[in-house]
Image 1 (cartoon, rainbow, N blue to C red):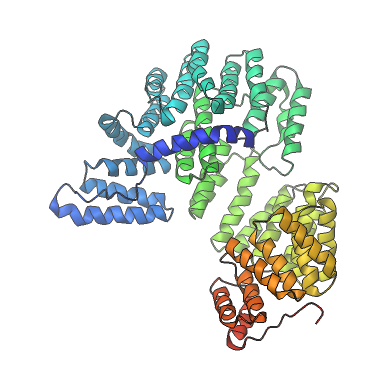
Image 2 (cartoon, rainbow, N blue to C red):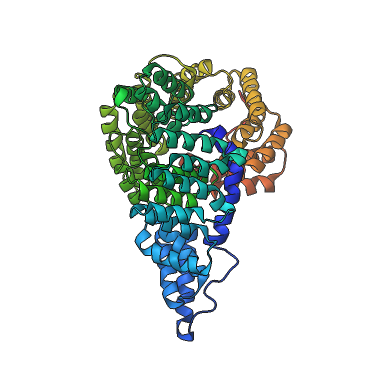
Length: 572
């Protein structure tokens, strides 16, 4: 979804998420298993419950669901356990087990939204659109029901051929300014499904009036192609690529090849409901609610299993929980014809690396780079992996291969030269590093990261001191709350012999980024120079506890023992 659309809807969704969380998610201050059904099961129920809480706090919703279910078997009338187990079953995509539990929850509380949504989805999957419509329409008019009820009920009516009634059912979304873009998009989809081209186009235009998002672009572009207006489709696709030049998730050229036979983005009512669930999943992900992002991704995929963006979202949530193997299964299941598939391959590789299989990750990326000879991303990711593993010469070589694929000089390519410059600098090839950093700065003159890195490097080398300091000061002006950049200014002042001001800026840096070993070391050095020796040793000791890079460790230990400082003022 676009940033503008997200901002408009985000406040509404946060309130809805709070309502869902109240009904269906864990409450840390409650002890759900303190009143078991019988004395003999007390310890077991409590143990299962506590194990579930630990698993969930660690991101393992699969294990948490199993533990909550086991606790529920020992305390079958505990409503809180039912809610917890049910929500996690949905997050795991176990709808068969979740459905009976959802019926029990609805019998206990008809205002519980998630069970009603799940049972409505089960009705749709069974072809019972009329029953699904009634269930969706009867959702509570507050919280999540006030948003999804009209949307899903409208699609259920559309699936029964009642387009006008569907649009009337959808109309309440216009009462909230935050929901108007979503109303415009889905009214466009419903009209498009009914071959009402003019009305569909009007809805798409409203939805496209802000920053573009992939699904609206695909829907409107398909309509233009099907109605014999390929030039309008191409202009729209080009506009999207212009706003998102580095995207791997969209391929306008492939869409244009379909011509007038372009498929509708939403071919039926069931897919329309999946679209609605995916919209909510995207918003939950942006609002840092990964559990509910997973729930709604699973609901979307239960309605439309071949939905690449929903598969990607669910897989990303699994990756966040460090369930890398399961995430990779989902990434690999994406349709190879979708541009999302190539992005999934990248994520498979980074997950393999996180699982300890760096060779497998590099092999996957090398294959992808060969299959996509104009794509930068596989080569850039190879470079990033080598940098992560401190293999800087290899990283620079990978970035060089990526730069060879550049079609020309554009401001957006600064990051590639910046990455290679860092790799060369860490590989102790400063002339090459300096050339790349200057090139990055020529492409993007006010880029704070480049200003900071080049200015810091010059001062640390004792060259271009005034120019380097001015660069860092400009970077701090641009990002005054970024600890690493403020640290650079403090260290620049240290290297210039201005220890008192160095202390001031380095203390500010450590407030912004308290667990950074480099900042702690720099602050310790500055403290030592101004005679605050106990505080200096404390900071050096802290730095050793923050997982410093290997080459820092011996120097830090020596400072703690002796106070000997290898770095003095620049040029001295």
